[in-house]
Figure (cartoon, rainbow, N blue to C red):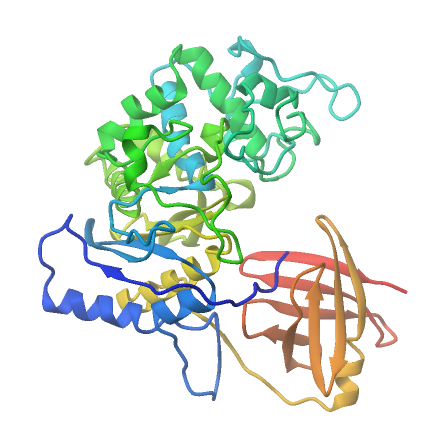
Length: 488
């Protein structure tokens, strides 16, 4: 868990208007200006003057070379803009610049899998081993004897599979076959994908599960995965600037962004190769993700259905454990839900959000490690400008506590799942906290037992026993919670 990331400076930035769209109205230009001139902080404190930072300044602070944004309004892509540079030669980011989408590959890829289900070629609830031919999910003797894994469990991250994510393969490094990845055999750089908890019992994010789905799709369709995705999803939706081909074909490389690390240095050799295409292999643009958002919304209404039927789209959007549907995380209110996914590859980070009912949404892509932070801030600015009910800054109330009251929070707290140590100290009257090896940040009291950070939307609730002694803490971040026990 990360409380915050470091701030550094980068090279000069440029702005490119979208040639994809017709001239925007004055009101749209004013909205765009409002967004790019005022990225709000993640936390707003009641009584303090409102603060915001221009996008280009924020990019410099966070060392983000390039950003691309597309906004969906009233069911159409209202505008798309590029900011900054795409590569070390100072090539500017444009709306046509390609970025690796990271885990956003999963929900787009899931549509192809569900299309195969719709055609009767796959079953959501059958044992996947009955249709896997190139590889089988190994039986587990100790964890869940006799357990089967279903496609529904793989798509909803409830199959109990190992391997959270994939680092990819640097330029010049040998790239494994998909079966080698599944078995953790060299030159694969991740462990074997296996059952680690009883299938169906709990939610646990697994890119490994989606790699099994990729093999299943290939075995059933008898087609290369990039071709299957092009024919069943990308082309029907109109995602003409997208591909799952890994590495990126030479004909598309001129429009591709180069990845940068968290220090602003280009990733040696350029973009990594991801044979785990369903989990991390998509190259795309925010505008194409906007088309994906629009397709889902119109399919829910029974008005598009280029890939999935209305019934299958509704099933895809139905949340289960962890608020996940079949490839997408579902949030918002029951009356106004949204679907979303983020993505992180080596040197690329991105985020998209789409509302199910009102035709609103946006996609933001960056070519920098750590870009998720600015993606969230841009999404918050878009939410404010367009009046979305979600994604706005968290609002907190700060109170004053005597210095002695802060001292009771001092100590180390251990969480087990995931394993991370939180440490709190008081320095010159300020409560400072750090998670693992992350950067130390300040926390501010909002009650005698609850503190919050200003640089990220994180709250800490300290837990007391019957004697009034602090014995643990609970980390609150959005809808997620993590408990930790105070070390003796």
